[in-house]
Image 1 (spheres, rainbow, N blue to C red):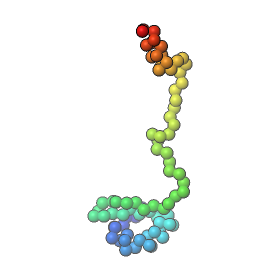
Image 2 (image 1 turned 135 degrees about the horizontal axis):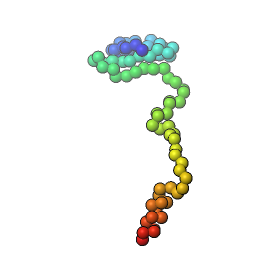
Image 3 (image 1 turned 90 degrees about the vertical axis):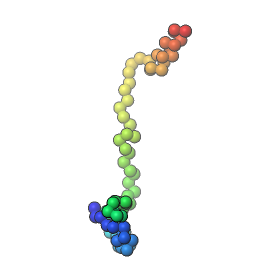
Image 4 (image 1 turned 60 degrees about the vertical axis):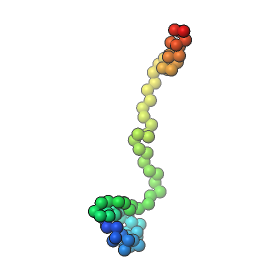
Length: 77
């Protein structure tokens, strides 16, 4: 991945976009700090973050916890 200053990007935007179309990637820096990343567009769906993926679901025999609590409340009343 190449780094380019914001000023250079403004001056050479058309040529740089052509390079991006061919797979090149750029990080634009302003005052020495990265501010943007220019990457080729992809139609592929973004990967689902790990925290959103379906996890393992435990299944236990017997009644569920909420039913057990309700039965206990009814029994002690």
